[in-house]
Amino acid sequence: MATSKLKQDETRQRRTALLRLRRQGIRYDDERILVLGYASPAAARRDLNRALEAHRDEEATEVSIYRQQENERLDALLEAAWPRATQPTPVYSKDGQVVGEELDMRAVDTVLRLMDRRAKLNGLDMPVKSEVSGPDGGAIPLGNTLAELNALIDNAGQDEPTAEGPDGDTDH
View 1 (cartoon, rainbow, N blue to C red):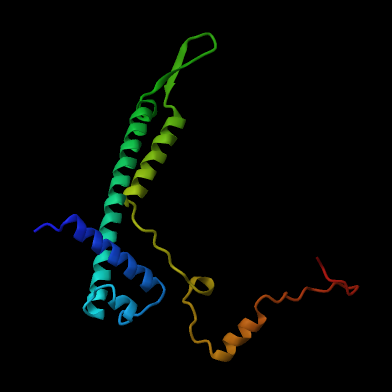
View 2: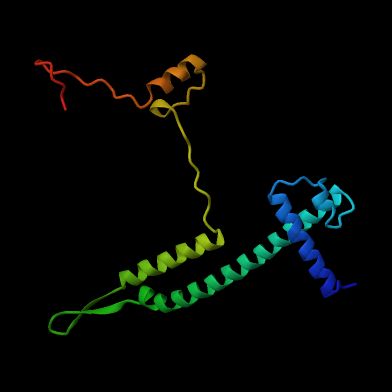
C-alpha cells in the first residue's frame, strides 16, 4: 500500500529533526529524540539508517545521471575531432602543389585527452600500484627502538654541519 503524501511529509520532518539532534551529539535514548515519536532508541536508530540509505541511493542516481550527461558531451566532442585526427589532409608547398599528407596532431592530442577523460569518468583505468622501499631499494627497517626514534625526531629539521675551509669560513 502506498504511503500518503501527508505521512511521507511527517516522516521527512521527523527524520530531519532526528538528523539535526544527532548532529548535535544527542544520544538515541535522549527524551528529545524519543518525543519525536519513536517507540525506542533502537527504532530511532533504524529510522536514521533508513534515511541515510535513501540519501545514498539518491546520490548514486544523481551521479549516474551526471556521468551519462558527461559521456554524451564527450561523445559529441569526440565525433567532432575524430575525422581531423584520423584522416590525413594534404600538405601544400608554397607554389600550391600537394607534397604529402599528414594528420592534424592537435586533433590527435584532443582525441587522446577526451579518451583519457572518459576512462577516468567511467573508472576504466587500472589503479596505479606503488611500492615504498628502504635504503638502496631494500626493505624498510622496522627494528628501531623508541630511543632511536626519539633521536631521529630530535635531529629532524636541524641544519647539517657544513665543511669549514682552511681559513675557518664555512663553504657555501
